[in-house]
Length: 210
Image: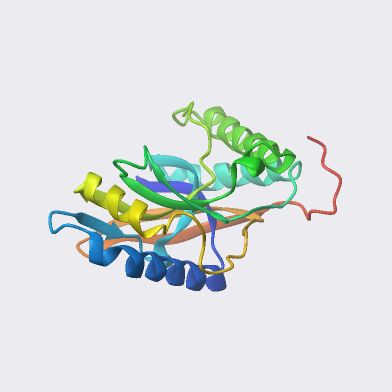
């Protein structure tokens, strides 16, 4: 058995930019955060957009899943997710997750609908192979930090700093051009991810058959 998930990988330039975004937010809030705050910043090298978490799966499913995804992606075009908004979950007053993602306008766009369609098709592939279904929609956000304690203090620091109001740097969009199957291994230093295979979407100029 292997622990695995399907994801969209980030380019190295984007990882570098997101590290700078994290540093900018840190500088704005560090002086206003109380001592009881426990905040963990996600390493840019580990950042990805999770399409579906699979959990523990049999190694024998790795290639059949690849074949199913390859076939499915012949019907889906590449797209881009703009990263022009900073936000938190579940609410600003007591944040538990800090993220970067698209605007609310984009979330109502045709591109967002195409992303949802892609996610649904991937989910259908997994269910056809008797992998556990997941009714949750795909969240088009990248996690920058997780707040483990002192949630209210972080919320107040963010509000005071204005760090969530605008991005200090221009951030390139996240290119959704391939789906990868990632193996996740838990190590004392944290999770280690390994790419098992990659399947690419159709070029954006190719007419979609969705």
